[in-house]
Amino acid sequence: MTHYRIQTLQPSNGFVQIHMQFRATTDVVYLQLPAWRPGRYELANYARNIKNFNIKSETGEAIPFSKINKEKWAVSITPHTNVLVSYEYYAQQPDAGNSFVSEQLCYINPVNCLLYVEGMEQLPCQVELPLTPTAKVACQLNLNGNKLLAKHFDELADSPFFIAENLQHHTIQHGTCLFHFWAAGPVELDWNQLKSDTIRYATIQEAIFGVLPMTDFHFLYLFREDVFRHGVEHASSTVIAMGPGKSMCETIAYNDLLAISSHELFHVWNIKRMRPVEMLPYDFTKENYSKLGYVYEGITTYYGDLALVQAGVWNLATYFKSLSDDFKKHLNNQGRFNYSLEDSSFDTWVDGYVPGVPGRKISIYTEGLVAALVADLFILSQTKGAYRLDQVLSEMYQLTYVQQKGYTKALYQQLLEKWSGQSMQWYFNQLIEGKGKLTDALIEALSWIGCELETHFNDLGLIDCQLKIKDNRSTEQELLFKKWLNLTASA
Image (cartoon, rainbow, N blue to C red):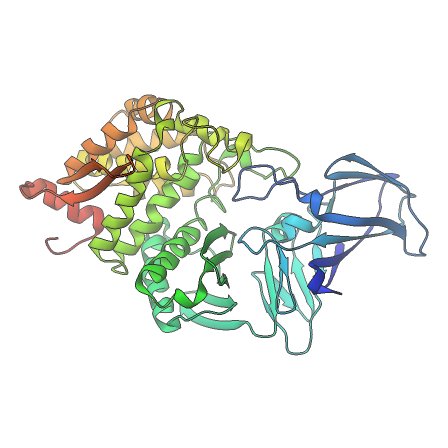
């Protein structure tokens, strides 16, 4: 077992003290700090936050070590010695994927700041927390006294936690799963409404895959005072940083909170369990290249909002406004003429999540959403509403995660063709591997459901657009439209 202990000796200076203890089994031990975190497909350089790195034996003797690279240390040691590692980690990034400590909150993402011993990744881990008698802990891991318990390092790395005296905590039962809502920071929010809306969109998502694969799910909300939006998925939880927290009672801000929450919940199935073969398992030491970002992020972006309107949480106007905003991002990105979707997925590891040089690439989120919408509407149109992308995802989940396998592009294409009854080679040639074809495919797909995209240039020279229902749509188009949004009455 690897034992960790977190201390917040002087939280005002932004550092946490981390202690790690393990029993060496060889004469050279390698310690690794993760080079990236799942959910953000770029190298992170967490090592820059570490200072005062020391290693000693349980008797207090210094143990020699050397640095192999910026995230890896080699330790020379007599086998069967208990090794004690200590260092300080600067935790001052209050977003959804990093760590932050203050007088009021200790928020730790283990993947940022905890080392692991190569060869011991599958052994149990425990983290001793700096708890006061009245402190609350929000985490997907089991808490035993003041210790969090994980089956192995991968589970620990995937389990961020909040510790605070004044955490808000609300729950609601949904079938076999208890949903937890934790809030750190100032917020004005109708919790009963949020709980009700969450169950409604969760029901839609669960129906696609046929299972809610956890008994507890934790929404860890970090509410900030500034304008902010960021979410990160985990197997049985999500961290969502939003702001201003006091605006969450307003319609626009609340709808945005629902959108990001629904997106992150959909990741429970799509990437946290059903995963590309290249990421099974995760390799924390280097880039995990995949050209399938349009599946794990694009489809999730599409279904996150779609579930809200299908559940009746959003009205049609809200959903159309959200789609129009996404289409506007797509139309104003000249990268769509220069770079394919699959290459843009691969290259998140090259220049991260910044725009990069003008016109170089496209977004696996935005353009991935467009590609997912086209696939969904194509299957609906070809089967006259009998099937859709739901069936593709459901079967892929059964064939991959349930059988402990990763998915491939070939499998995704095979399932698209099975449920549409048509060849989908055009889809991959033009929309996934090709350049500049997404817009035409989007316009054609919208026509199948009797919708159109009105566009014009604004005063800044950018394209504005508005998704609308055609006045003269056919009966067939209207029926497909209803199937698409799970509507029972004419829109």
